[in-house]
Every structure is written in C-alpha cells, then in structure tokens.
Length: 494
Image (cartoon, rainbow, N blue to C red):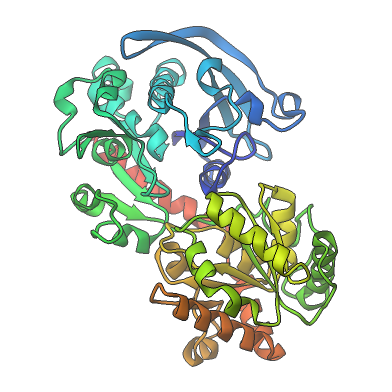
C-alpha cells in the first residue's frame, strides 16, 4: 500500500504526548511490513533538536503554494526529511506565521487564539500533498488537528481528482477529551458550505468541532484500545460525542498501541546506566536503581521501592486521587519520583511533597526524555491511576523494564495490565495491580497490595518477568491497521 500518515506531532520532530510516539512508531512498523509510507507533519523550527537539519536531512522541496483559509490566502512550502532508522519519508509543512512557535498548541498553558486557522491550513496542505505526490491508497489522520481532512477529501477533493476518489480515509482518536472545539464563526475558515454545520456532522452544541468532523467523515474510525472504543460510545466516557461514535457501528475499531522497541527497550536503551533483559533483570536493574537514586539525590537504599509517575499533571491522570491520598501514601516505606508538567495546582502539589519529604520524594516539573528512560529502568512500581485512559504508553514501557504498574482498570490500562490474582498467578499472566472503582480508597488498596508483593521477592520476580516477556512491539499491531485500511479502501472500490 501507499500510505499517507499525518499528525500534528511525531518523534523526533516534535512531542507533547503519546500521539508523537504512535505516529512515528506506526509509520516505521508499516514501512518494515513492506508498505510505502509518507509522514506529513507541521514544521516547528523551534522544537527541532540540535543538529536536526543535518541528521534528518531536512531540505526544501517543490514550489511555494497558496491555500485558502476562509477569506484569506496563506502561503506555505514543503520540506523533505527522513524518519530515523527507517525508509519512511517525511514532509514538513512550513508556514512560519502558524508553526514557528515555542510549542505546538499552547503558550503558558493557554491555547493559541488562531489554532483553528492554523490546523485548517495544515489540513488543506495535506490535500495539496495528495495532489502533488499522490496517488495514495490510504490517508490516515490523527486527532482533532487533522479532523477537517476527511471532510475536505470527501466533500472537495474526490470531485477534483479520480485518484483521490479511490483513496480510503482512516481517523484515529487518541484522546476524546481534546476535541478542537471553536466558536461557530470559525466554520468560515474551513471553506466548506454552512450546510455541513449541523448536529449530525460538524456542529456541536453551537460550536465547530473538528474531532467530530473527523469521526463523521472518515471511512473508518479507530481509537487506541478496544476497551476505550467501547467506553466512548457511552455517556460516561463519550464527552458528548457518544451519539456520533455509536452511530459508526462496526466502522469504529479499537487497536491497542504498542511500543517502539528501537527507543524503549532495556536491552538497547542508550539512556540507562546498564542494559538488561529478563535473564539479567535482578542484578542489572539494581544498578539502574542506584543510578536513579544518585541522579535524583535520593538516599541509595536498594531495599526501599522506588514508586514512579511520569505524566501530564492533571485530574485525568489521577492526580486528584494522589492529592487526597496525601500522607497515607507517604506513610509507606518507599521513595517517590514525579516527572511531568500540567495544571498549576498539581505541579505545586508535587513540589510541596518534595519540600516536605526531601529524602523520600523527587519532583521534577519539566519534560525530560532522558530522565524518563532512567526512571522506567530504575523504578520498582509505576502509578497510572487515570480517571480515564485511551491507551497509555508508560504502563507498557514499565512492564518491558520490569517496573510493575498500578493502574485504574479503564481503557487501554484494562486491556494491557493483567491484575494479580491467584488465578492469573497460576496461569503466569499476572503483570500488575489494578482497581475498578475510581476512589482514593480503592487506589490505596491496590498500591498497598503492590507494596506487599514487593516484600515477597519470589512473587515479585514472577510478576516482573511476566511483564517483561510480553511481545509489545508494533509488528503485529501494524497488521491490524492494514486490515482497517483494507476496509476503508473497499468503500471506494465496490
């Protein structure tokens, strides 16, 4: 297949969350499976790592183009690049007024006022890619930033090109909470007829909703775990879009994310003190643990468990449970590590914990990719008490690194972590601890059960090895996406 993959971020060009990991890892896996993949991203010059232009072979390609964004015309151009460790070609959409900014979507936690305009331009630029570099068998769009794209293809582009008539479209929801919702007059920016601004298509409680647009117009809709695909069709998890989602029927598919094992695997991780695998975990992970304690300025105590959390600091991620748990959480003989950024009150909460318990808590309110790897390799337990979680990646990383997860059994956390029980231990499938009811008491009970298991070395080693021996790579997952792509294509070849 010839596949056009598009997203608003992808490692290593820009990253704010799991979307960036998935966009690059899936593209690489599809390439390794023998398909031709073009990955299209905005060009964020300020976010590129040092030396990126040479390393990723970034250079101009083609002529400057002009696209309509509502009543105005906006000029842009393309830069070609290479996704490292693959044959995947990358096109960067260059438009300095829209994308030469210090972060992709927000400044000081406030969304850019022109976000709708910026990503309307990006979606129209992708249609331009289809015209200049196509034809493509499939266009795979991701999240609200590309939600307009399936509508542009369906309403405009199919009428303009016989090649595009045969192209299938797939739209993936990575987190339904982020919808690209804008005031109704931004409908003008899309360039589409107002007749599409109705409750069945692009309108949402009087506003324009780009995520809903993608859900309605794409041939197939996927999300990042089977359980989340079921959850979001209900009012409790649907964020108001459950009618649109349930209306897709069997065209909505949940596929659990995988791990890019070229980047996240203890056998080849370049950021950690000592590489290890399931055979050497007991000895070598202890070296990584000591290195982490030294790096964070915590006392080097090999027998005290390190409990980690790498996360956006928000209520969705369960920080309200942590805050309510407070002293009861810290009363346990353990060291705690928090890494991430987010809502100010939760950032302040973890900072105060570190000030109150300087020998027990390390709080790092920042984004730090290298330290994230060290934390996964050196920790014993990983907390993911998310209120809801489409998939989650850190619980997958944790299991590969022999770090046992404690999770709320929702979405991808329910699909990926097998809770410890007499039955799962006997079957050899237990990989972590989970709780069903979203409450402080249920979370603390699961956490304390995990600490109890930690104090039983034989049991702990069994749980740890069960997680490490799983195949969490993207190879099999890429085949699931291929089956979805085939279904999308058949809708235009009958």
